[in-house]
Image (cartoon, rainbow, N blue to C red):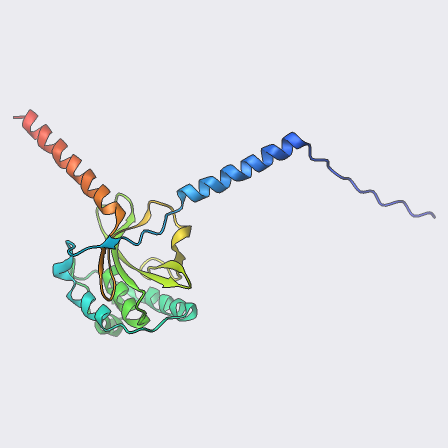
Length: 211
């Protein structure tokens, strides 16, 4: 029996369909870029509102040497920190890292400071900000630089590093951050202060109108 010839179906993509497909891909790529958070490293600040509560943070960061942590080491520390129970401590003062490690428990600022202590990496920053743009409650995490990329290390909520450029613009909003030798104020701080000022003005106007 003669073998039936192999049939190959080829779809010819017409020029107008190709242009539409390329346009759709370009729009999708642009949407991803505009929704991603730029790396906000802040500007140097001589004072921040949290300074009165930062003695443990400044002590730990001040002892950090010139070590560079590897990604494998960071991943290991993230898993360990994630396994610590969440226990809320004092509102503003972070627990000493040895205390957090001994009881294997702490809140976000305790875990962030413990992580800074374990990293021993001078690029690490202790960050205070918002997990989302509008929550009233602040959150603490670590920013860490590795091979030119910045990573979010939040072992309170995640067991792995998150690349800063991969998150949405309104997630992990830094307000203030602290490194071995400096303090930083970030871009969203002025926006939140402006928003708070507008709310205060609106409340005052409403109160005046009700008199």
